[in-house]
Length: 120
Image (cartoon, rainbow, N blue to C red):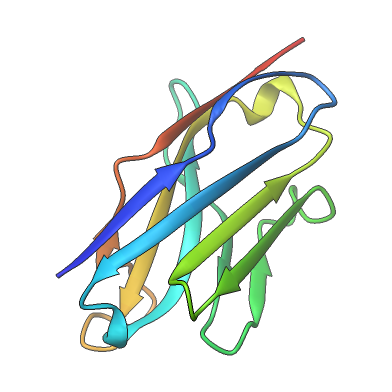
């Protein structure tokens, strides 16, 4: 089993920045892609960004340029740097992890999430 713990959420004014962190613990040797998803109020969960073991990244087209995902494999950490935040970025942000033993392209593990609120 893999446990994902997010941190770094909070309240920020529009135009500000936040960095979210995701710490992976447990049986992390089989973890492959790690991603960030978000659930805005009243909306379904959507992909923000994901990063493979080799550092290859994928971003939501609408967020590319403002958000940056990075990964420290030695520390089992993944980060999401969010700049120029907008009120529409308000959401609960979740870390996810794929497992080599799981279904390709579908996360096997989810964190509990961290809330980001952007005021106008």
